[in-house]
Image (cartoon, rainbow, N blue to C red):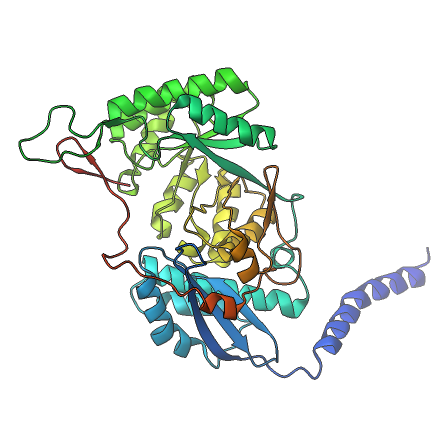
Length: 437
């Protein structure tokens, strides 16, 4: 090749990005600046007693809007009031393309930050802005996050029963349907660990209901998974949610006793107030640990990830700030060899599920996703609900989040706040003390 030919090659190569930039400019030429024209809060019970709150951000481009989830089953009234009074005036007139800037501004907007309701509001805004960005680009959100790194998203099933045999039957149902990752509970959270009402040593005229006993629970949990491993062999991936019922010393003991059955992970073995104990568990056993369902503050999950004291982070996307924050968490996990297992839960909604899907499918730090099935009415109300088949979650692969909301149907099922307050069910020990969930 002559020096002149080489120079031509260099100039031709340098012209490629310039040509691409010109093409992009041509596509945008004539489009008016995009601004947020209106914000709507849509609350619904989904036809089945849910307390779902969605945010719809409407832009100046006709027909272009985005939706996000800011659902909070126990503080839904507070979320609705704050969205109407504070979020709506904050957003109107702003540029929806500036997702990160609006996240940062929204994070410090109320001065105090990293609270549950504030994070719900941030999450709804963030998801809706990513939805708009994807629709305008003509791309699914996961493509804007770097594109797919897996074909689709593996999920785990929820199996259980009143006793070990009933739980085995339920596990078999999912196993035969193609699920390899199965969470197993007996009798709900703390199941197998309750002294029946009226039995045991009770205080005079004191608490007389079912009483949680961590020693009984630990013994029965070990028996449960020894049984499951003997029935389903080494290829089954078993999970279990302790739901923070244990004291720190018992948490260490149970993690060690579960080591021989090779759990996929044990979830929430400690309450968030006791996260320093995770380091001690890791020093004595290899049972994989998942934590974070109640986390709202980076100072809760960052030390656990960076210290490699947990194996899976279990934050809920709509509780930690939306897609932007979830993607940052996934990247942090990848750096330190931890994996994501974003929390879903039976009270959650399809918009949040799809927000997690887009982060999951584009993140090398992904581990597993919790499943959540919805009744037929919800599929009609929210066209584009992700499909779940044989242990996998499938999005629509359409621009944006890939889901919409039929406001007319949603309005037929108004949200219903509890007359007694939205209290989470509480367990107690035999002396009447509350067990932290």
